[in-house]
Length: 559
Ligand SMILES: NC(=O)c1ccc[n+]([C@@H]2O[C@H](COP(=O)([O-])OP(=O)(O)OC[C@H]3O[C@@H](n4cnc5c(N)ncnc54)[C@H](O)[C@@H]3O)[C@@H](O)[C@H]2O)c1
View 1 (cartoon, rainbow, N blue to C red):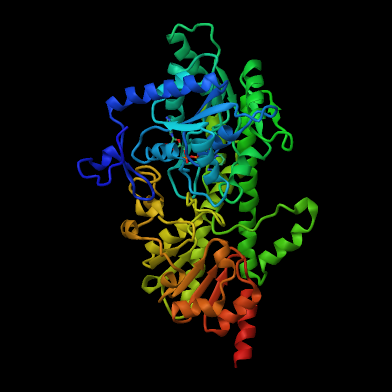
View 2 (view 1 turned 120 degrees about the horizontal axis):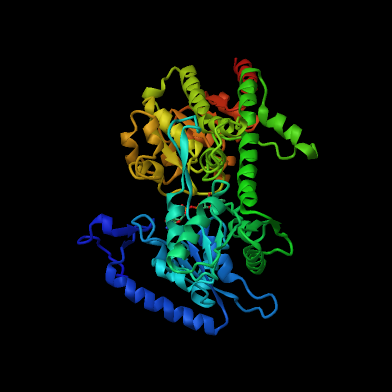
């Protein structure tokens, strides 16, 4: 591996990988592989002498990086000594290679609000010496356990119709092919990636079995297992991996026993017992159903949100009133769309599997895809409210400066994948607004800045809207006053804690004039709303039909 290249000149961009902090790393050259393989062999030999098993985590993204840390941090319950040596394996792509040198220094490749993440990675790499990272697939031949945490995307072809889409299992298939070519047949393969139900048996098994046969391992049965992640990147990131209930399954009895033992060793199963299901398709379906259930709960409220807006109802209060019933305590108020990496896609993986992997032609799915479509398009309503509020102030979107507060998909995290805020920005941009964006957790909004290549070339949501070209120039405002100065409208898009207690007087002061205020997430209380009207602002909110009453009262009192 080459050393850090301060100045990338001499290294064309396609041969380098740049970390979010701007540090440039040259991608490994052919000659680097031999050196790296020798380093790994030596490391693994030392670790085996210590009685540790070798775990390779493939894909050190949001899930893999933290899972690698959790396994490396696990200690034998009797001796208190580490049981595993973990090697995070990451393909050396321009987008992701930097994660390897970062991890090898003990720096977490994922930014997290959870104060446990960074010290856990640093502790495992530098003190316990139970964690390292590499770019070479050859590491797979050294593993006792492989944990697969690569992505599996669902690409939508149209905006608001997820049936027009397909599961992209190519990265997963590529990983499985290399695994089959390289591993010892006794190695346990644990697929954690959220996959279309059936993938472990119908896709992974044949790939690995064939690779074994090619290698002359005719009688070897792949030890394949599946256990999906319920990780929530946020304040309880590590705990959501380690201290949380897990479901697992294996393709045969040996695999089932091995995966149960492995997860028992690394997770807090005393407090959060494992559920062992018989077949991988059951564990795979479990993930898809639980996420589709959640997506449906959120989508269901959308129509009642519009009902509330048009009939003087404050839906946030209605939901709080319903929540007191223990049977209804998980009813949710949705923000402007349901983002994140999982909920917008997982149901699609299920529908795709039914037709593509299992070969059914009938259409049994009604609610699951509809829920995704409703959630994907909910944010457009926020844009309509902004348009109407501006109109009530005698302005049009096309001549307005609009500030969006919150770019991530949920409160107090910096993950911007498929956030409702992105659609808000795109639609307002299409309508001609000048956009400013602020988010205390987001330094770069890559979905916009790098829309030509992010999330993958040809897959940006930019393609569903016109007039998007200049969004590559949008930079996150560093301060709230800077973001708000001169704005005609502010969209409160995410319930970040910094935004919950914003005083109307301060907002208007920062803007320098009364502005349109759009509350997408039940952020404003009635006093705030009244105060905004007193200050000459216009207020609208998703599901907040009672605002009109407050407005009329404020008007009467003002006379
Ligand atoms: N992010 C979440 O909140 C969350 C929650 C639960 C489940 N999941 C599931 O976990 C899986 C992983 O998600 P993520 O958020 O970590 O994705 P991610 O995109 O952050 O990470 C995937 C990583 O795998 C790497 N990779 C891809 N192909 C590879 C290969 N052949 N060899 C080695 N590395 C490879 C990528 O470069 C990337 O670093 C997905 O199936 C997702 O649905 C995610």
